[in-house]
View 1 (cartoon, each protein chain N blue to C red):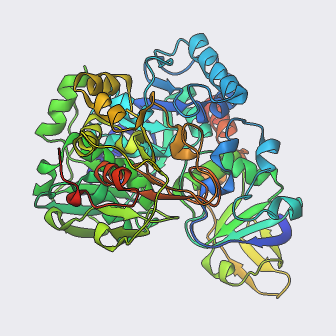
View 2 (cartoon, rainbow over the protein chains, first blue to last red):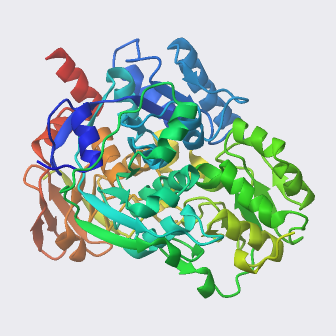
Length: 422
Length: 164
């Protein structure tokens, strides 16, 4: 029977010839991820399992990225618990401060993700790795605990939606605008329990960073995973980062999709998600006059080098509006170094922005940029729920790095097309 | 009958950030988490909830983050069952894995108001609004999941399987 790309990866890891939507399978995992919020719960559950050993020391990644560098004593206790577990179980992929980056930017960069992999992570944005042709999905801490012990997880085989892309994104329009547009179109539960598979000739015009951003936000449409086929661009990235040989799966020509959406990339506009749901989107032409207090550029969604380059292109030689606190977070230490080498950090500081060490901090209202009552932020992050970045009466507007940087300059949500470059 | 209590009623897309705000995720203690459950959208929930009460919501309940702290907080607050038109998938999985009963039933959701007394029979999937007398049948769990719930969660289930 015909299968989608996601279904083929699940079938291969469940060691069966074929699977169909709705079928429950137990499958072997290539990587299990946890962070300083979810791993402590998993470690407690793991202790109940009655085993001393993890299933494979090489196939577990522990990343203290959420409330780090430790924001308070309780956070420090949680990180300590994870650090000691990593040491005791000899987990090879534990990333201490200094090596740590935001998990979903870090793991592909460190070569822990390969095409054809089956990956679970106790973090909802684990779906990011579909950009490299892996099946990866977010789970909770108990699933993580069981996976650390057994190397397996159960899956309900998802049906799929296809997004068939043609054309090319215009200037100042990025993968972020495309995924916000898609979420606005199908809704925050538009892909509930399903795969989002991105296909078509338009894919070849999307950079790896665009693809990471797009798959990262599949969860914001309720999806189980987002996935791209493996092409030259993905293979080039894998060759530069991953020592393993890619295993390439592709959808059958007659694979069944519940629905196919045809999207001409040249028609996508800079897009902003208004509070308090990611599907509450408007194009930049419809935003009106929205005064802002803070800009956050970074996160697992948009803290990669091309995101920083776009922000620098807009901020170069200019000053941010004095009423806008502009905080920029390179997602990993390597990205930080690269931004330093390319002179981007200097551009940011000279523009009046601050540059932070990698952390998830402000995205989830943890630390490093919390909003007060009535304040508004434009953020390149992924969620704008009630109270997400701080006070329950604050607001988050989700946008691309280009829109965020342009908005930092003017103090209002701003179309990057209107900014004259220096 | 396996659950009976007063209904707390919520709308569409109740996300895990309002179920348990991230600012409280520096602990894993279920009781402490429960003391902040729902506070950003319903400050009265924690004050009014009694052991056995039932949470009823519309579509996509539990969307957003994968934090297992969300079902843990609901369970530790005393909620015996969550009934929704649909659940976000990670929340659905997490609830089963930690032993929080959840049922999908659009008709029941439409027929239950805040404050109604609701009873649930898990073996048959019957949901009854004791205040109005109406009742509905929810889709029972597939056998695979039933086994997991019977074993009281994923960890116990896997331990049992390993011994078998």
